[in-house]
Length: 276
Image (cartoon, rainbow, N blue to C red; front, side, top):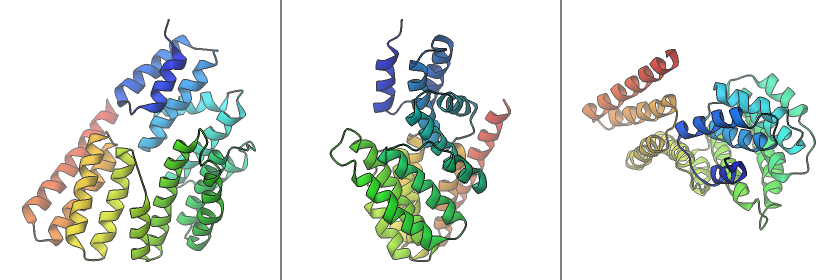
């Protein structure tokens, strides 16, 4: 028999290839029906797809269903917050608010911070930028400070990185490009995919400021880190296309064409995989 709790701990502490996550999840569904260990595996599987931004992948949806049906209120709350994140990403802000409003009240600073950050995201997309910045400053960061020195401090660090990224995005939307760069520079990411997203934003802002050498260094890093971390094809293509635009601005037309062609191939391969 598998040692599912040990396996879950391992999933929580390692970056696991996508194919391996799918195999583990299928095995868990086959072997753990009705057992509490299924909830533990479901959370780690959901975390994998959340990190990728693939909230509507069939495996993610099944993992969310498992979490929502759990008898653990903390897992229920976490699941609803993550589903709300996905709704924000899809532009369904009203549905995201309903999910947040129906989330069980949990005295877990990490879940409360993630919920507040999701509300800030809704405000940002509704162009309520000052309100969004205030939520991050007055709700998200104080909740995460409660976790310093606790067993959850590692997760709090990841959430602080996400908060810094959101602060940078909000500043960028407000046209405060130097403040945006400062926020991105303060984001301390230990994960390659999160680092790729930060480098992309750093590169984009540097390009807007006319700092083309700094922009190229950042976008080179974003392209490489997204490839290495198995980011979704659409995300990798976005980074390639932005670097292609930068090459064009620098007069490097051959490199620009190569990046745009690679981006088109990336999108094409993603569409073929979806059709299979």
